[in-house]
Image 1 (cartoon, rainbow, N blue to C red):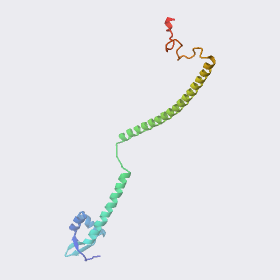
Image 2 (image 1 turned 90 degrees about the vertical axis):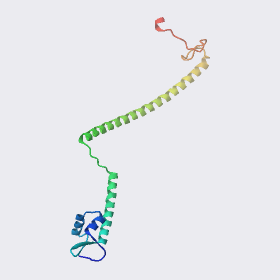
Image 3 (image 1 turned 30 degrees about the horizontal axis):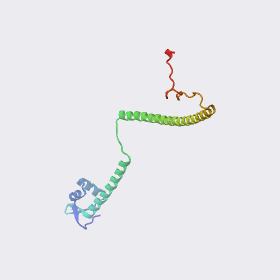
Image 4 (image 1 turned 45 degrees about the vertical axis):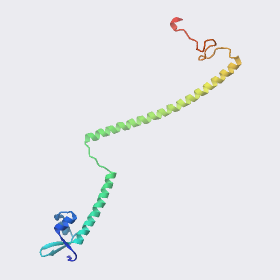
Length: 169
């Protein structure tokens, strides 16, 4: 169906307007995307159809570039050699094992920390009981004897008693 209304452009001008080759414009003519008008053995194209095709191509490339950008943002494909891939797998396995060991060590540290706190609490209770028993014994006996290894004997000027070494006994 040939229409002869409106301004016309040549195949070369249409190719320049769309940024395509003349061969591609001829393919569009053969597929029916563009309408040709023959005047005196010369082929003309309707400028409105060329502009519409340009707009639809820009919209399509905008959609494709947006889709490509989205795909690039979500999945990047990288090609590496088989040897590099295998070395990365080995390293990944080692890192996972190290991570498991660290998690186990952290769990053990937490267990030991809880045990240490419990032991410290027990030690504090025992010290308190010891102090209470010393106070009770001291008041009952009237502080009569030397019974504490860390406390100096009376008359020793604040120093604990010294013991002779084993070779001097």
